[in-house]
Length: 98
Image (cartoon, rainbow, N blue to C red; front, side, top):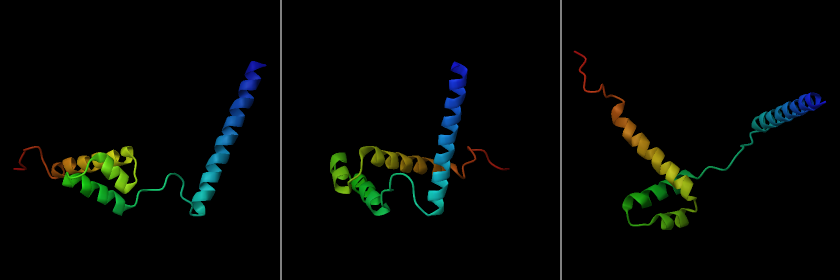
């Protein structure tokens, strides 16, 4: 009896997952975007410029740009990582090609 209920439960779970996938595909076909809206580039670049100037506190930046602390730090860290990776692209670790 327990095994039969488990099988039915699994089937129900699979059907639900398939309906969700179909709904997401249908939404994508209609051009609907799913998820949280992105922060406009202008607001993000303003926040980064404010931070780079050193004249504003993090709370002042977040209030002025109306974004969350997590979003701001994620972008800040992403930009720091990109800046660190750029010099490495052409680097051959000090080895010459000769």
